[in-house]
Image (tube, rainbow, N blue to C red):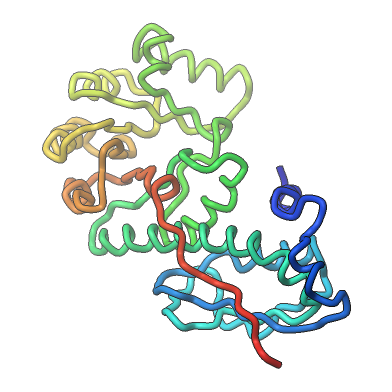
Length: 280
């Protein structure tokens, strides 16, 4: 689904057959202004989505006095931009515009907190595929605006051999060999990441080879240190599973390359924003 299609569906979902509230009490010729107000400190994201909502619904609305860019810190009381144009149209898109921006800004704010927590370590924060259906593009973009990095976007841009793939394939070696054969036969150049559930599997993977990254699933920091000694820099490494903001530094201190955190997109609080009438 394209950005435009997503916006159109969001507008249809909210407006349906018509914004009866605005149509009932606002003149079709009324013009006005509204400001996007920040109601709590955070990282702003989704300004481009707001512009797309405007373009799709009513290009007569103009966005002016844009004071921030996506990824910028904002504080309570800041005005991000001003909208000028048909009053009915601005009121009709208010909630859709805010829904996109509040969620994206909340994700960017959460991502920035995690990134700042890891300052001074080599570890990089990754998101996951735990995203809202049809919102992955925007949520992963927001993660980037917060300073974290994207893991694979979907099932098509990396091979990740998780526990179920390994079990269905008949073991680690078979899963790796089948994955490499598949890539060769289909002339694909994709990284292969494989999940290890314990130290013995790490040893097995390192001995067999044929992959680019090893994910340590639900390992403790001490287990990761032991696993990194076995890997000895031959492959990229990733810690995943059960890692919280409070334990983040413990995992980063092990020397692991990446830490993936599903909470960046599926367990966040939207940033409080509002669109308010501005006298002109």
